[in-house]
Image 1: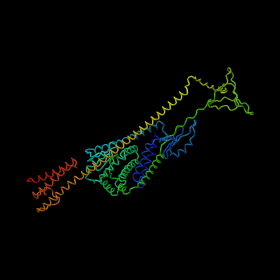
Image 2: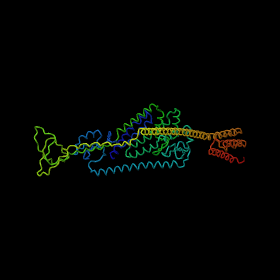
Image 3: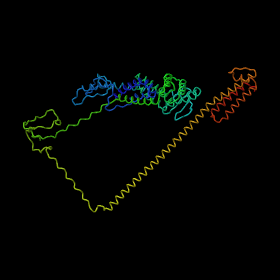
Image 4: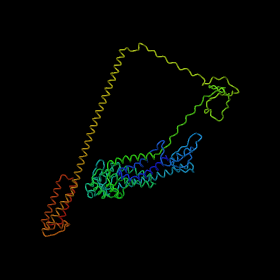
Length: 574
């Protein structure tokens, strides 16, 4: 386990450095979406389990003798060269090259294990504290952003809210997905800018970027001691925003890119917490504007995807951890049959020139490891031989095979007649035909039920699409009507102001264009009546307009009533 942790941290750090070097040229050649996909390489390596029998390339390993004493550290190629030079232990086991943590060979094994456990506990504890602190910052940001937030709409499971605490649009939430908009979103952005900004934040949710930020934060927490990991996290977030921009602008016209650039300039925001996705962090503006000026074609995008998959696969194979397979246990030696203590002669005849040789007893060897007798040998006769023993079992002839059992006699009276056998066969064939027919009918009914279910699903999907289209049309009409209300009010007020200025000029009174309503209203009673009639006409038309929502109609009428009341207070004689 310790060896896998060491190799995983070293390999992921190496892969982070490689991605940091390759992300800029890959983005120029194939687009930011391919550069963002390269970050899968260190992320997948962090969860890759050790492979049986696999040896990683260029990852530190330890060369260990069979007696478990450590020689030193080297890379895989050096360890492979050193392994044959290690002597073989008495049991016949060769040395192994096993991935090991970096341990000091001086202390005892128990002290080394305790030090390793303390280091791992310290590493995981600091990682947990760092991860918890980042989650706490995110929760505090959510609490502040949702304070006073007003729900606006819900589209495709994403809640859209207006918050007075934010300078620009932000996407938050993994399970409960939300988009937070600033309070002046309708006034600061044009309709096309609002559409592109909402598409950007919705693309973050569709691409699961917030969940990817959580996983990247966990990897960063495990690498809390590594400055390269913190730099890689910042580069990962920058590539994520560039890839989201490329997703929104895919296939758009140049004028749409200009509008999107204006939306980015209006949405410059400070640094956000770890998982939130803002429309435009301040430190990425130059990169994102430059990316919009370099669109990537579909052919280059597909070729870049193939290159990215190849690089990810090669990196995983080159840095994968492994563990040695346990050696198969040797087959137990076959012991020869025990021979009686009496002179025996081998079954093989001796050579003509070989004289009988007396065999001395073997000292210090196991009886099971003695080889079989291959030459003529005579064992010494014991001083007091016992009673004659039977012949050894190995010289006995094998027992004869058992005789085959006699076939059972069949009573002739139990055999059925040919007519009965024919009727039984016909009944069996009829039963098989009925079973096949029933199976065909069941399969036909199952296919019909599947077709009906598929048709019902298609109808339900069509109904859902029609309902979604109707909701989108209603939302578009409501937004159009909402956008027309301020323009109608401003147009009416500007027309009334111009009429009052002209009336005052006809009466010989010259007023400035920014004169307040009290000054405009003092030109004469006829003009006051004209102004009141104009404002009353506007109020009547707004009150009778059925296309306006009730809340918007009420706000507009309230503003007109306030203007009429101010005019009456300024002219008490009216």
